[in-house]
Length: 247
DNA sequence: GCGACAG
DNA sequence: ATCTTGTCGC
Image (tube, rainbow, N blue to C red):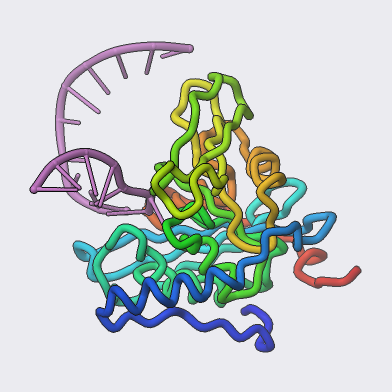
């Protein structure tokens, strides 16, 4: 289980869309856009949510990996009754509670969290990855398969190519960069990467590419995706030394 | 009114 | 996200 000293609280949903949006704007103020993660990453973790019973139950998966070998060190699945429907822009109110429970099930906190969804590439700069980062205080980065908002130029079909994702004209801050479109794999649609918390805009692309093995999704998110969506099993590697936390 | 719309 | 058959490309 994670450190008892780490107090994490999930957002509550009371049906008030306007209140939820106001809360997002307020929390977005607490997002840190700088590299606040360890110089030498020891562990990272991937987070994703799937659903059962026609959406009645949310199933969140958290996978802790060795940042160097990329081998899975631990994983935990949490099931919670779904409290609200999916509403574009309010995803965190639907999935964050389950994600927090999944995090609490890990033997230790990761140095960096990869969350399936957007970070600040959001209407109010608080996508689920940013919300997760602010609530837990952990460095977090968002990795989404589709864009929510923004525009981006065409990018070369080369592994690692990326181009800015910017706010459209007719917005409060036209042209503001909110993330990146990243070609993680040749021949695949780009990924949308954006800072969640304690991660800079500049380091986001390389941070994600560093964990891309041979698939479109980086390992942390890919493995969490597999578990959350019941796609297959993930072999956990025993690593006593890392779980010790010394050094 | 119309188009867009993470998971 | 989930359901769910066949099909296109490396």
